[in-house]
Image (cartoon, rainbow, N blue to C red; front, side):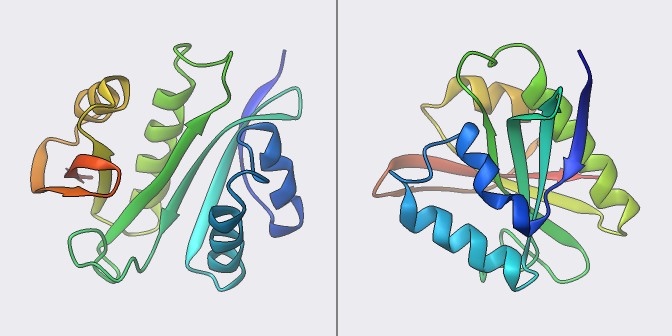
Amino acid sequence: MKTQIIKLHIDDFQKCGNIWDMQRQSDLAKQFYREMRDGNRTTYVYTIDGTFIGEISVVKDADDCDYTIPEKRLYVSRLIVKEGYRRQGIGRKLVSFMMEEAKAQGYSELSIGVDLDNYPALKLYIDSGFDKVIFIGEDEYGKFVKLLKTL
């Protein structure tokens, strides 16, 4: 079993449908595709024997200074692992990879937004060093927190 994390090429974007339902979430898929095409979103994919299992995306400009600061802070806008592969450390590997990748690109901070009732994700981010709360709020999906990690 060969595992690796690869940078997603836009021509392979539809393969992410193996991880999440891109048809049901077509507006989100279109947004992510546009952001990749325009150079604002970079996505990395965790593969097992070439099959897409998980993904993590960062955004350079989220039009929100809590999330992004040019040349300093990237926003982790997406972390998802395919059902059936969760709770196996794949999300943690993707977060660790992204921290190293952002640092190598010259960024000194990563931000994330997470719903307060998403305990597994919240625990993962806190355990990964996202230890500074920069905002607590509520939107149409419920209460959430914005967290910051210094690299």
